[in-house]
Amino acid sequence: MNSSTGPLDDLRSAVLAAAAALAEAGPRSTPTLERPRQADFGDLSTNAAMLLAPVLRAAPRDVAGRLGEELTARLGDRLAKVEVAGPGFLNLFLDDAWFGDALRGVLAAGDAFGGGGARAAAERVNVEFVSANPTGPMHVGHARNAAYGDALARILELHGHAVTREFYVNDHGSQVRRFAESIRARARGEDVPEDGYRGDYVTELASLDDGEISLEELGRRGVAAMLERAAATLDRFRVAMDVWYSERSLHDEGKVKHAFDVLAEQGATYTSEGALWLRTTAYGDDKDRVLVRSSGEHTYFASDIAYHQDKRERGFQRLVDVWGADHHGYINRMKAAFEALGGDPAELELLIMQFVQLAAGRMSKRSGEFVTLDDLVDEIGVDAARWFLLHRSHDTTIELDLELAKRESAENPVYYVQYAHARIAGVLAKAGHDEADVAFADRTLPLEPGERALVMKLLAFPGEVAEAADRRAPHRIAAYALELAQEFTAFYRDCRVVGAEVEDFRLALSIATKRTIARALGLLGVSAPDAM
Image (cartoon, rainbow, N blue to C red; front, side, top):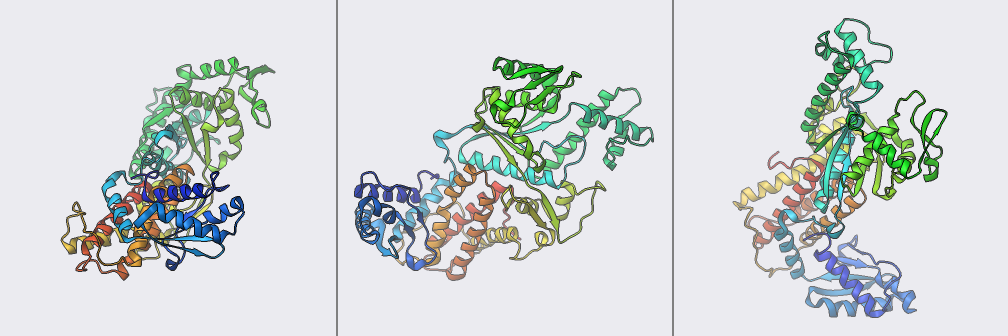
């Protein structure tokens, strides 16, 4: 079962087919099919009749009655009844057997449940994220970038895309030289240059300078040491990069010159006052940009252009760059450069992460100057850190409540969701149930509202994955996981599981819920414990 072939999509198709039977052209916009806010209004409700009414030039409630008859003929005994409500909504009451079949489908899908929605639209996607300068430790801002980029990659993979996680290493240019000069100064017991790096980590790197190597080599050693630390930090944060791409290699391997040649062939560059310029105004930028200064020094923009050309030539069909808030003004020029290279700007997505603010708690700062990603994990743990960095849209500033993140109570959303997972594990243990055995008999007793609501929430998961993938919105998965946990809590409160006459069905429903909670948490990089 995936987002394009599940029971809910079958119902949507039936609604569209029924609408087309009443009016060949169908409604002028796509009808909704949603859960009503009140259980008395059915399992699902559609506005299709109200959209059809202008086409048929008939009253919406009359159209709803005709649509209900058409749907009943198409769905047969899967549809218990239909009701016309309000100005012309059509409420659908599904038969209990439909819910049983839907649950069996969820369980049969196993690990594939919720995935594969991209199907024919699957792409080779490069997600470049974090890319912190290798001249200092990763801080809380990088933590949000890391959580977001990794979660997005996980969601895109489940949706059906082939994803490469990439870290772009800024290991070329004046900043690396200043880094080397700072290390050397510490090694000699001297003051760091005014424009150098002063953190305690620089002093820790002083042993890299044996007094015999050049500044260039010292810079390389310093960068290598910082990258080793970055990889260890990211690994601790459950982020594993597929590629660590060196900016220096773009220059050493002639890829910057190659990009300049591509731009020249497109007629996109010119020389003025001894400098090489890119004609970005021809592609929507507010002014042309320098690639090579009159001094012969390349700009950072030159490296970025060569890097994106290299991504294109590596065969990626979509490039997703996750940038910090300070890069907002860089979007237009990069889009322009990408188009100048011959790329489709729609295939380059530049996502800007907003800032993280820490609230309600104090933390020790390992660097002595700022809160690092390691500091954050030491304080609240990986699970809480990733959840609270992901539960809001990436384009909004978040305030991370440290005290709430550490609280073991229902007020803490990540604890609440994990507790629901652990509670189900406890129920299965109490029942002595083998989770691999999920068979259940057809129902003879009517379904309880809590059972119906929980099945419907499970069925929403593929659609949530699809929406999260298409909108680049991992926070939707966090919201879904919390809602699913809440739905299970309501079900467990109202419906006895162990020892119930329909124990087999409720255990199967609990297992499907446990697996889906774990899968949703997994997409966020959060663990799903069996005991708490």
